[in-house]
Image 1 (cartoon, rainbow, N blue to C red):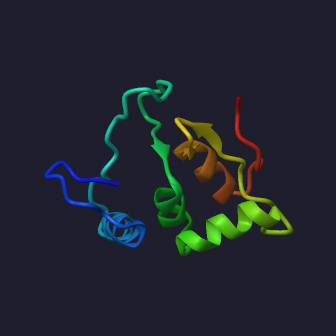
Image 2 (image 1 turned 180 degrees about the horizontal axis):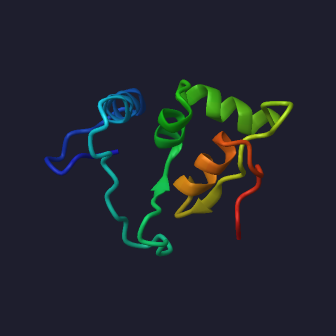
Image 3 (image 1 turned 60 degrees about the horizontal axis):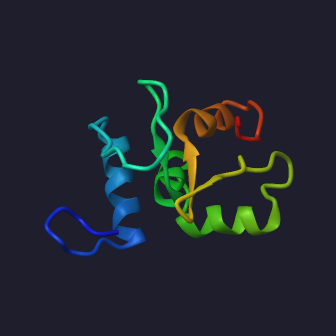
Length: 106
């Protein structure tokens, strides 16, 4: 990922920034991306770092769950593949955290 100033941001740095924003009840960076489908006004797309921050796990845990279909008792929601990357709707992850269904809405 590249910031507005042109510097590169690592997955770990992006994850940490999201964790800090969520923990401090600060606005979470959620920029719009040209090319992704529009969502309801109160929903946003999240990448692996965003999903990990919402679930409060390491980003590698998310990729591990995807590779193995985990967690076993209630698999993590399937991502949408958009622009060759994986994204989830924040609402799908929040529903999963509340114990709702684990598959994404099409």
